[in-house]
Image (cartoon, rainbow, N blue to C red):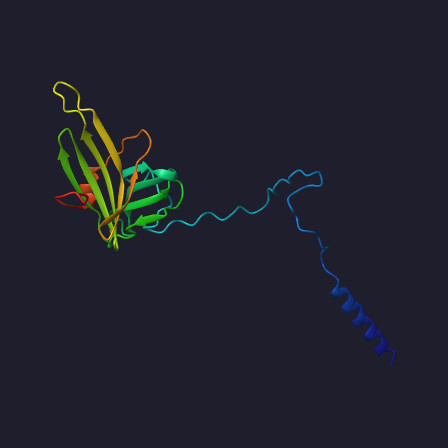
Length: 209
């Protein structure tokens, strides 16, 4: 019965081989060399996955893209942007969308997000030596009123009008104004009445007092 000891020795040798790691254990790579210099990235490393394509109604940035029309756009406090852009649904139907947030980042707010939701309303009135146009977006009990106006400040005969330009967005909750974000910078943004006529529902009166 010499085969029994031989079989036992073979099984013991096999078990020892299986218990050893197939590759040497290494310490985690911290990205630094022994000299303290950063180690260059491996050129053969796989590229990172591309950012997902935004869904219809979910824009990639707060600012209007080059492929979108812009009814209004300006910078307000903290470097944020208020914009009203032409958005399309998956059937190619256009509607106006209010956006707020950092210009090069996904918006903190974008509304509406579909063609079937509440449509933008708009109004425009003339002033002596100027006028005002407004775009209104209703989201539950919150209303966002984007505005641009030109007001005459000099009424002396024979002198210029000295027009004053103002633009921004009013925010209302349950009919009470809770915020007035004024546009900053030297630009004089104005609401595009022509695009508002095409995409919104006209009202006779302004949405503000």
